[in-house]
Length: 203
Picture (cartoon, rainbow, N blue to C red):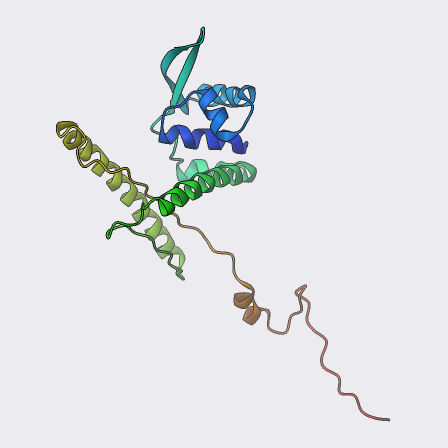
């Protein structure tokens, strides 16, 4: 997953089915490059072939992400190399940004019960762990609500169906310059102690 294009392809296939040609058009990338990364994701069993459609004398293959593709265990994430983590994060944040941006300009936040918050907290290690576990439980509950909704929507011929985006993040913030200033004390920019002030007297 260290290649950012591979992450973006997987992000799209988590949202919907698509063929390499459609992916190439959307991403503005050569079809050959996209097809290579699609084959790699298929070999890793992160996506699966779901449909074949005749197209101008050839067969177009459509893929979708498997259910487990969007969730890495804590242990797997801890063992993931830094370069791969950055690529995965870049891809995920890009997809979230595009999704939220489209919603913002098309009325996706107009509902009274839509939600957007950004909260800064100061936690100890125990509270961090508790909050992380709670977010995982929230995601699992959201998926259970989707499963319950599917039956009701099938019965009602999808009347009242709502496409929903749910973004969850928990991250450690980088201290700001203002936060670091009190900690620096009498230290200079490079962490070295400043020389004592000298009073100048006229000779």
